[in-house]
Image (tube, rainbow, N blue to C red; front, top):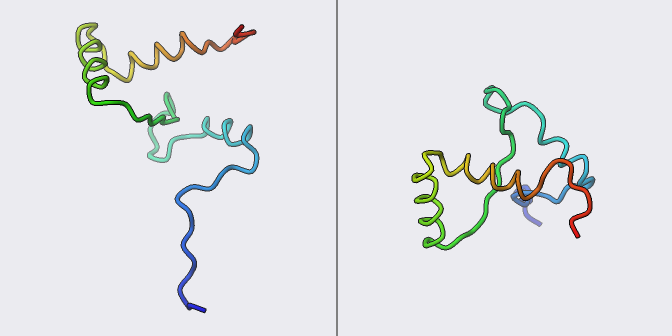
Length: 83
């Protein structure tokens, strides 16, 4: 047996996913106002990234704002039945 502490995983799965999702509404760690508190990371091709950046530039907005709007339209608060 080793005297070293065991390595922990980078992130553990939440025991209660509903509570985990709701906890994203907590205050930000850096003390700034919590306008947007959750971060979403996705893997895309460099070509798609380029197209997204060009579209945002042509619209005069940031990529983040453009994607927030797109996601809000696709996943509205009053979801209803998606079928």
